[in-house]
Image (cartoon, rainbow, N blue to C red; front, side, top):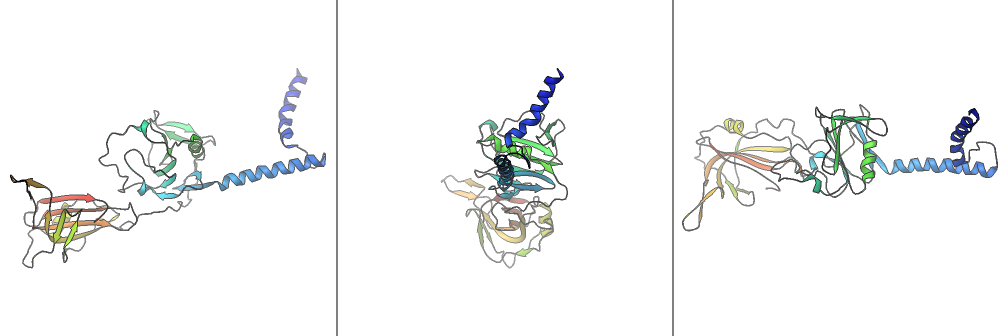
Length: 321
């Protein structure tokens, strides 16, 4: 029995040598050349694998993605259940009001979403019912307590949400999952399309009387300069305090205007319409993006009757004006 065990142990030790012709300094020259070539091929394979991937870091959490994938600010993720575009992309950072902000989405059957490749790293905390999952490299992450229906995998690691889209080749997503790591203090990977942010979006702009006529929102809203005799009862500060939440990606202006809008309107008996608001003296809080980068901020307004203080309109749109 001892002899049989020794033979098995010898076979386990010798097996790797048979694969690469183990002569390291002794044996036939052909064997030494074969071993040298095998070592070179293995090293080249490792270098090739590294060259085919790139490291993406966000707040210390890291993943490896294919080198051809661009790294883009999370503000440019899409919405309504499918954050990834057709082109495989690595997103970093949250979406705080870009086109992917989830608003007015219809019901989405996650099982019917198209299969695309991508990964998105953003701040996030695992739910209380999350379970632990271990990657091939031994990294322990948190995963949803129940299986997801859509073609993606979401895990949490060091207060970062990692959403991995499972494309047509699941091995891509699996490789990203198994590459998850943590290196505190590592700078964030540079991302394209970073949205400019206001230092203090809640600071009230200096109010002005509009000087030039402005037609916006697909020619449905017209703002004209106020008359020289116009005097508001409502203060600019009161209008600003009643406006909606401010976005850090927008620039705000506060104007006294003559406000007209095609909508809302009532239909007359003869088929014509009469708008509710025409040539009203109004305070308007007008928002426009801080930067020309697509997907960063949007256009919008809050309008208040400058005599009564009542709200007239609140709207947002893209593209502008």
